[in-house]
Length: 275
Image 1 (tube, rainbow, N blue to C red):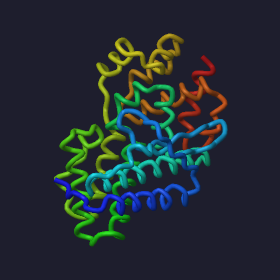
Image 2: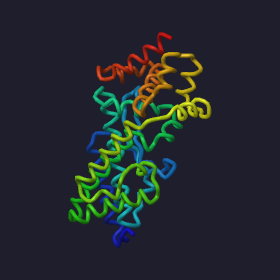
Image 3: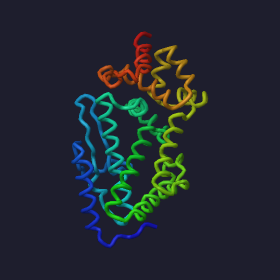
Image 4: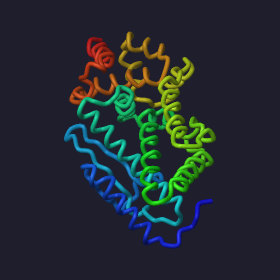
């Protein structure tokens, strides 16, 4: 169990300093909200593709610390959201990897797809990796190295014990030092990128869910896209098709994919436009 704190005020002050260090100094707009963000969420990052503003929202009502473990959890959460902010910034600058770009755009206006594929979501895995590693670095400024790593391990094991969706793929038991920590996240990132889907998954998606991208492809009779959809081998390929559908329906955001590394997405979108 996590150690109980004897000086809650001290840790709340440390968390407020972390907010300043992590969010304000990053150049992203900070908005503290007294209202719940919902579903137990402590912080969230929002991007507006029209105004190109990126904001990190923090639920002030949840910044209450009863134990050291909660301080670690909040530290990871803030760095996790900071990584999302950087992801969005890279997207706006056309420097994001195709995996991160498609991960975000594929689930835009498609909450069901995001929730159904959360444990394979490359943007979320990338953000959690960043959150855990940078939280560890931050904790080392406060605690000895050994204690800092033990706190991170406790965090990882608590997530696994709660069967947090993102941690179902991560081999937490293999983590014993910083190198193995990075390796575990790198391995799950590659595994998620290559996650294969069966035709049964695709058929279920089309017939049984309200997935708007799948429905759009079927209802608009885009034959070439439809057969590519059925032929999809992994999560990234599915994300690319969903991204093309999203951009086709929101042409004002086409600037997000106008990069040579995204040529296959542009070709998919052109197929939709020409159909």
